[in-house]
Every structure is written in C-alpha cells, then in structure tokens.
Length: 268
Image (cartoon, rainbow, N blue to C red; front, side, top):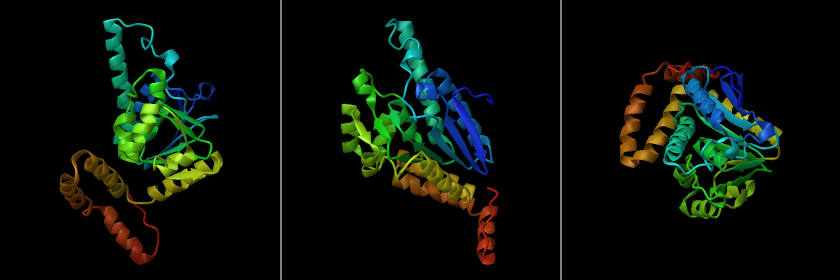
C-alpha cells in the first residue's frame, strides 16, 4: 500500500518514521488506521533498507485511542451477527498491533500529549518507548465499560510488572510521563517534542549502525524467551548464533575494528 490516509511515512538513511496523521481527530484509531498499520509493517519487515522504525504522532497528541464513532456495531447493536462482526474486527485490529511486535526491525515509540486506550496498546507492542514531559497515559477502557482488547492486557504486565499493571488497568486512571518512567513503561523523558524526536532519531541511527542480522536476531530471541522460557530460549539462541556467526557482517565487524573505522554492514 503506497497511499496512506492515516499515516505519513518518512525515510532517512536506514531509519523510517511512521507518523500518525489524523491530527484533527487527535490521531484516533478507526478501521482504515488498523488496515494501513498492518500493511505498513508488512512492508517495513520486507524492506532491507528499513532497519529501525520510529512511531510518532502529528499534532497536539500522540493518539486518543479508538475512534468509537466510526466503529460500526460497537454500541449500536446487540444482534448475534453484529457481535460476530465485531469479534472479527477486533481480531483484525489485534493483527495490526501484533505486526509491530513481530516486525524483525526494532520499533521506537516517541509519545507526546494524550496517549489513551488503543494508544497504550500500540505503545506496548513497541520495543522502546520515549515520551515528552507532557505525555499522559491511560488504560481507559474500564471507565468506558470495555475490556482492553488490542494487546495491553497481554503485553504490558511483562513490561512494568503485575502489581503496577493491575492498578492501572483496573482503575483506568491517568498516569504521567514521570510515573511511566518510574514504573519502566518508558525508558526516557524528553523536555519537549523537538528533543523527543531528536533523541528517538539518534537512538535509531545508533541501532541502524549495528549489524541488522544481530539486531534482528536479538529482538527475535527476546520475544522467544518471553513466550517459551529460559531453557528453550538458550537452545534457540545457540541455533540462531550458529547461523549469524557465519555471516559477512561478522567478518566486516572484525575488519572494521582492525582498520579503526566504522563498519559497513550489509545484513547478510
């Protein structure tokens, strides 16, 4: 998909920015949003020139979450066929969030302003989260008589721990950037959006300068460890590294070190 209506895509070197681009709606998430998000990450995963992705939001806020007004059948009907249609729609939206987590390339989120509901689902699927000092987060669904269903309940406990997560998910209360940093939901607070985007870009460039095989291998192994445990993870990484250690990137790293120059990795 080349013509996105809910996103802007900007590329600089090996870094790609996916910009939520519905500022007049505070980047609320509707059906086209989920369709385009999935298409974008399928494209990123397949593109060898994409090594790191940054997700950020246009306008005053990162995202106000689900656009309830555009989701057919969500509150208008209780008929069995409408409920089944809603279930299928939720599964499709879940697939778009999972595509972020499953993308081989690291994903850095740069959040500012309001980050509510579905925005937290999206952030939880990212590898690294930065925020500006004005960011406010909320797992808002309980206040809306809903259950968060796009991944927050499954992913965020692994990020911040069960106790903190249960408090936030059950209460639906707001939490600030400072609190998000304290509970490890984000790893960095930036003074404003300019410094937020600059620091996200700097980290992306640093990661992109590493071997793509190694970076993608680390992300893959970390996900495998979480799902299968330590013993299986050790066996998996032995197999993974046995393949990577035969790569051209390893030879380039050694040669660059000997020649005292930055390596030029090809990802093979």
